[in-house]
Image (cartoon, rainbow, N blue to C red; front, side, top):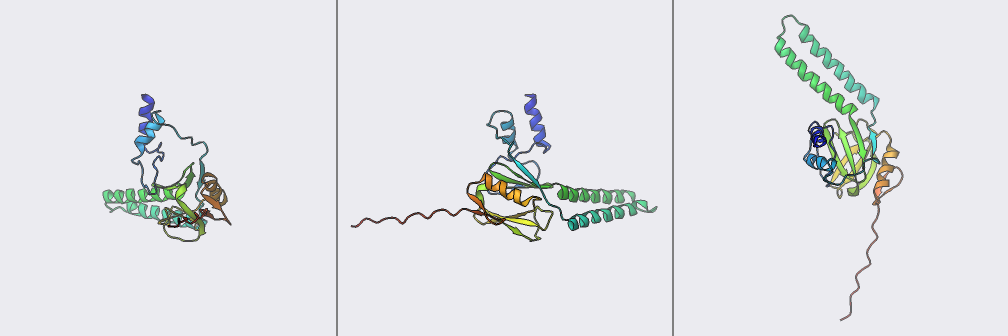
Length: 215
């Protein structure tokens, strides 16, 4: 019973969260609706899934992106300290502004150093700071290199674009080991095949035409 309560507290704090729900949708944020299933699994009321073969790939971080973020953090800290140093400044307002700036800085650092990709037996789990995405491996249509700078859970311009759910959804990632990332996905999903630093869905053999019986 104590173990069950401990696991529940881990879920509430977001430290023990594990994705257990199928589907093509995205999930964002901290504690998800699947937390009860996680507790049931860990308590022995549901069958457990072996995670020993999971592969984790941290996001590649471009130097210029890291420099821009860290530079803006330094500027914001200086701008936060100036009002606090003025003798005639409103201390309450200055502390509120300083608190907001620190929260924004913490958020940016969380995204910069907390972006990575975990490949389980049947899905790709993407974490970028507080944001969380799921991609079922059997829903992937293709993975190809891209230099798109559209907002994505990626800290580098050297990206891979994943098209999934019948082509209706796209997401871009930037694993530090692109070859290992693609290989791990292909190993876990027999529907996919690797080809020239890309991943594509295998072509399904065409079914023979139906024979018509003479009248």
